[in-house]
View (cartoon, each protein chain N blue to C red):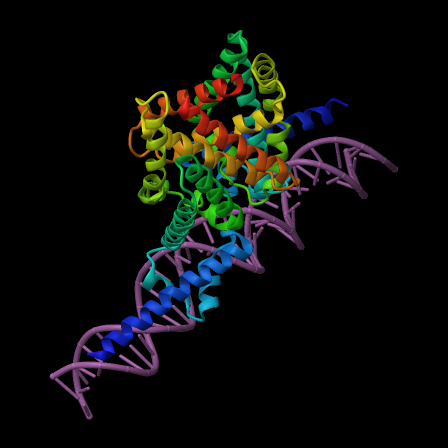
Length: 200
Length: 200
DNA sequence: TTATTTTACCTAACAGTGTTAGCAAAGGTA
DNA sequence: TACCTTTGCTAACACTGTTAGGTAAAATAA
C-alpha cells in the first residue's frame, strides 16, 4: 500500500507548507496581518484546503507557538551547556532568553503577545515547556549553597521567569528610541539581583 | 452664541458615550471583540458618527489606554500616600499596581496587551505617565541610604517596572488554575528582593 | 418669512476577514 | 466498466474597519 503512504506524505508536505507560509507572513508583516487567504495564496491552494489540516486560524498560531517554545528551549539548553556553575548557567540562560526574544521579535510576540483569544491553551504549552526543568536545577543548587536553604525553588523559578519576561516585554515596547545600552544594563542588574538575592 | 456651545456640549456627550460604550464592551467581551458597529449600536447612532469623533478604532483604544494609565496613576498616588518610609512606599505601590491589574484585567490587557498594531504611541503614553516620577523618589532615597550610593536610580526604576509588569503579565496568563497563593508569594518575593537588593 | 448655506446624520458600498456548505473532478477499488 | 472515496474548488455567509455620497434638519442671511 505505497499509495496511501504517498498520500500521507503529501498531506504532511501541505501541512508543513501552510506552517512555513504562515511563519513567513508573520515575520514579514507581524502576526496581526496573518490571514487564511494570504496563506492559501502563498501555498497555491484554495482556502478550504487549510481547514483540512487545521481546525481554525488559532490552531495554526498555536502550532507556531509550539515551535517557538521548542526553539527557545533548544537555545536555553545550549546556553546552559556552555556554562558550568549554577550562577553562570542562570546568567547564560537569561542572556539566551533575551537574545532569542530580540532575534525573533515576531516569534516572541506570538508566544506571549496574547495573539490568541483563549489563552488557556497557550498557558498549557508554556507550562509544558521544559523551561521549568532547565532552570529549576541550578536554582535548587544555588538555594542549597546559600544561607536560606528553606527557600521554595518553585517560587524562585516563577519569580525568575516572570521578571525576565517583564524585562523583555517592557524593553520590546520601547524600541522606538535606541536605548540598547540601558537594556543591557537592566538585564545585568536583574541577573545580579536575582543571583545574589538567592545566596544571601 | 449659546447655540454653538450647546452643540459643542452635545458633541462631547456623544464622544463620551462612545468611550463609555467601548469600555463596557471591552470589559464584557475583551478588547478583541470590540467593534465599531457594536459601539454604534450601543450609542444608538450610525457607524460614521463615530468617525466624526475618532480617526479610527485605534484612536478609541488609545483613549481608553490613556484613561487606564490615569486611573492606575491615581491608585499609585493613593498607595504612596498611605505609606511613609521609602520601603513601605515601594511595597505599597507594587501591591497597588498588582491590585489594579487584577481588578481591571481588561484594562491592563488593553494597556500592555499589544492590542494596537503601532506600539509607538502606546509607548509614548506609558512613558508619559507619572509612574516614573512616583517611584523615582523613594528609589533614590533607598539608594542614598544604602551601601552603593552610586547606583543609577533610572536603572533601578526601569528594572522595578519591568519586573513588576512581568510578574503581573505571567500570572495573568495562568489564571486557569487557582494559584493565587503562589501569586501572592511571588509578589512578596519580588518586593523583598528588590528592596534588599538596593540596600546592600 | 423665505432662501441659502451649513451641519448632522444615515444608507450603502468597498475591501477585507474567518469559516463552511455544496459540488465537480480526479483517483483508487471492485 | 461501474462505483466509491478522496481532493480540491467555487461561492457564499456573517462578520470586520472605513468611507463616499446623499438627505433632511437646523442655523444663518436676505
